[in-house]
Image (cartoon, rainbow, N blue to C red; front, side, top):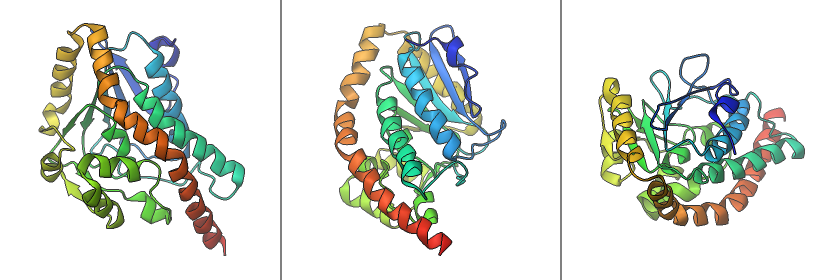
Length: 254
């Protein structure tokens, strides 16, 4: 069991605050600005979501970002694709982080303050998705690094928008803007940027006003299918991604 005081200041790239009604706001950032995702944040977020899930005082979780993007930038800093031990760390964290999100047994609201070009699968594990008009989805980093997108992108996008559309999104590096994402069922509401957090808090308060066991077991029931999909596919997918990562790493030093 966790308490917010134990992990509130634990993560350099996460700002945490919780209202009196138990709505936890999780803001991803780098030095107060928009997040640059890297190997260090990969490690942080794996533990972060575990701690959130173990804190029984959390009634609702709002996941958002800083600046003008949710996550639109990635760096290779902290990732080791070159050695078996290095990729083993990536493999273990990649398996755990998605299941740790699903192990958060309270409703999750994604408040997307801008582009989601990196790890959009985190968003697809939330229950309610709010976006701004500036929000756009794309799987950018896998092509940039030359690796297969098998860390959850390959499982969750076809599940959410349909098999053929999901495969097209992945293979074509497709960009999906907010309005199209809403039509496809990825986004529930499009909200002006200056009203985004207020709307997320309003929804959070409505959910938190319901009986705790009701919201908890509603979340568990709604995500059971996703849990099965992730559990069955993530390990194999990451193993395949590791083959391409090793090849890309070898080519980089050749």
